[in-house]
Amino acid sequence: MKKNFTRVILSMLLAMIFCLSLASCGGAGSGANPDENIENAEESDSENGAESNPDTPVYQIGLCNYVDDASLNQIVDNIQARLSEIGAENGVEFRVRYDNCNADAAVLSQIIANFIADGVDLMIGVATPVAIAMQAATEENQIPVVFSAVSDPEGAELVRSNQTPGANITGTSDYLNTNAMMNLIFAANPDASKIGLLYDQGQDSSTAPIADAKAYLKNKGVEIVERAGTSTDEVMLAAQALVSDGVDAVFTPTDNTIMTAELSIYEIFSTAGIPHYAGADSFALNGAFVGYGVDYANLGRETADMAADLLLNNANPAETPVRTFDNGTATVNIEICEQLGLDLNYIKSAFAPHCTNIVEITTAESFDDLG
Image 1 (cartoon, rainbow, N blue to C red):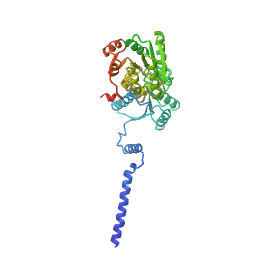
Image 2: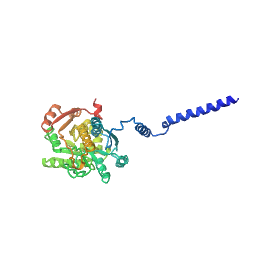
Image 3: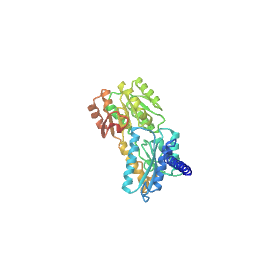
Image 4: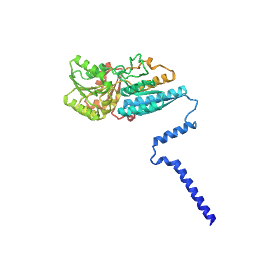
């Protein structure tokens, strides 16, 4: 009896130990935050020396994207890939903390606050609103900031001048040559007499190009119709209004709001026979007739080079000129070209004198989808 009692007690103890071991190993599966589990695992690996060589210099970078779209995503992907290359070449590690605010100002503020609390060595902001928010948040702590895809750094008051930024911020610009885009419109259709301007009035990236477009069109004696929207629904209504207005073509600068809405509006224009000219290749990818501007993959790599220069070579952002690029690449959506009843060979011939390169593309949601 005594032996049986002892066995029962021993069995109960073993069962309790077994249950406790299961709980400690698998407790995260019931109601725990999986991100916290990953972070805890990373911290554990770091403490055990499994994550990297403890002698390898480590730089923490906070990278924030403004919105999920093909061009900006291209920039982010190439920033991270290039930083990995530079790290391997120089025997250092860049730990990139990436986030996307999805055009939400409150979320953006929290992301930046988290970067600061995490003690990042540098921040990278993709698109003008992110750059402006990072600039404001680092005035006192002076964390270096590198921006990317800011169309007008001086106009947005991010820098004192593109040549001499003057503070803790510098970066790369996707400045748009608006006159060159206007030339494309009239090269394709010399008889165009009414041009629609579609943009978000709240986007800093649209201010200068829209002003330039108005000046160009007024000088040419062409009628101008302006339509604006701040959300996809509003942009769709604006696009439908431009069709009703009877415009011959529509121009949009490098405007993130319209870029996000392009997949929802391109058929409105193509069905009506109206070509949409816009300030980035992602517009054409998402259904616009033509996207004209910089190589965003290269823009991302150059942004990474600037960030690495600040961290590895102690370059001073206040004295590091903003990098600008030749934006002479016209990306033509050949499916839309056909739907508009335009001859692709004629279009390429007409465009050739006004750009340095012509790229053909088909409609897709992202560049990866092109295969």
